[in-house]
Image: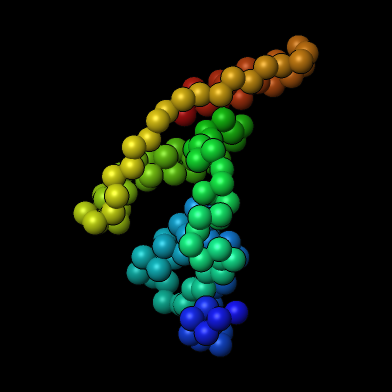
Length: 125
């Protein structure tokens, strides 16, 4: 670890391992929360973020979940990403988001029923 990589403090209230989209957004939301007075350390092995998990992914915002909570979380993530300046201020970039879907195929009627039930939950939300 180089000197510039050494944490400024010897202890933190929250340590987040991984600085890709989930780690970075968790750190940001914590530090923006007026009720949170603690300290946060994000540990990311690639400080350029060029090879962080999100950078290497397809950068998709998945919404094909089967529970209301996970669908709502994903919906918020999509809305947040499309409206960064609203949340982070005018200096935040306006991202161009391309919306496209996934096609799931069922190998049998049992799995087809599961997919139909999940799709019904998704449409309702």
